[in-house]
Length: 157
Image 1 (cartoon, rainbow, N blue to C red):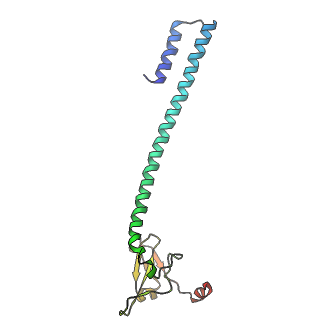
Image 2: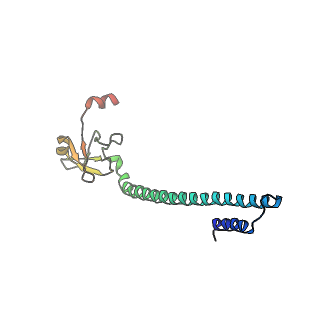
Image 3: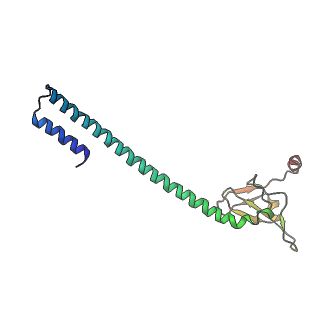
């Protein structure tokens, strides 16, 4: 029997006994039964609220787990790349622009550049793509445009 059912049962007993609610004892019993009814309603409301909050917390926990998995997967990918980050011309302040210099692979005549897309994908490309002015990210499809502004570079120094 739930607390609501017990409260209703007591109210029914009081009504069934046909207590004189005008006498002192009857007034007191009626007040106690009314109080129990009010407490029962409050407890039922608190239980409903607790269940709703618990459900919301479960959803938040699932969302946080998904975010944590995403971040940890991204961090694991970045850990492999972090060792070589000092060699790449990627400018972290500008997600869609390349750095000042590319990485020269010794005897090879081409310079390979790298750019990091906003989605986190790292794209390698050569002088020919650089001169074209843009490249499309193969992961998210976003077009990354390159700008050459030597005056800005001199102003930054």
